[in-house]
Length: 280
Image 1 (cartoon, rainbow, N blue to C red):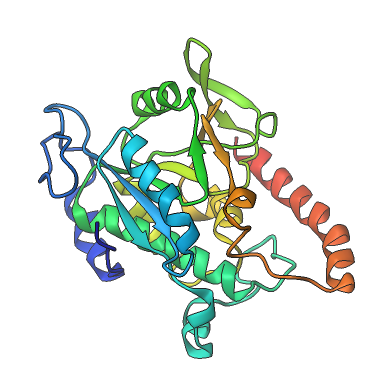
Image 2 (cartoon, rainbow, N blue to C red):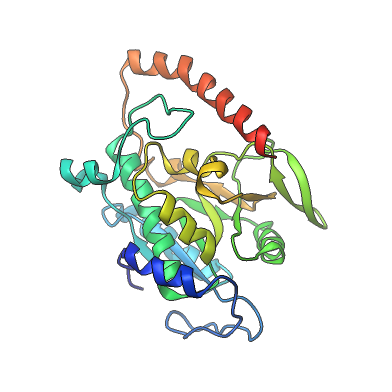
C-alpha cells in the first residue's frame, strides 16, 4: 500500500476531458479483487496519520473488510505544518455565513488530507473513491448501505455514510429494504466515510484551493462547492476514535473558548440551516 501524492494541477485536464463515467476496468494495481466489467471503477482510500501507529491494525482491518480495493492515503500532520504552509491554504472569513472560529492546525491538516484523497480519485482516473478516515468501523448494515450508494452513483455524486442516526432528514431518493438514500435538508457533520465521484472530487478541489473552515462544514455549503451530498441511512459505520486513543485533530480549549463556542456554534448552524433550506 502506498500513499498517493497530492498534485492538484492534474485535476484540470481531467475535468475538461472526462465528464461522465467510462465503465472500463481500471488497472488492478492494488489488492487482488478484479473490477467487474460494465460497473463503475471504485477504489477505497483510507486516510491515516503515520504517527498514529495504534490505528494501523484498524486500517488493515478496513482494507480487508471494505468491498473495493483499497490503499492508504498518508494524512497531513498538523504538527508538521509551518506558518507559510498554513497561510497558503487558510484564509478566515472567505465565505458567508462566516465561520466564527479560527481553525486549528489539526483541522487544517484534516482538510488537506481529504484533498489528497480527492486528488487521488482524479489522478487515478477512476469513477469514484470510497474515502474512509482511519477511526471508523463498519457493521453489518454497511454492505447494504454501499449497495444503495452505488445504485445512486453518477457523475457529480457525493454520498455520505453518517455515523450518527437521527441527525439528518430529507427527501428519500432511493429505498432498498431497510436502507434509504436521502437528499438532506441540512447536510450532517463528520467526514468518516463517503463515496466521492470523480466529478465531485474535481469540483471540491477547485472550490477549496483556499478554505476558511473545516472540511465537513465546507461540504455543507453546496451552494459554494457545487456538490449536493446525499446520505445513506443507516450508514453502517461507527466512529471508534475513543477506542483508538482519542482524536488526532481536536486540541484542548480554554474555558473562555469553550463558552464562546457554546454561544456561537448554534448561531452559525442556524445560518447554515437557513441557507440550506433556500436551495432545496
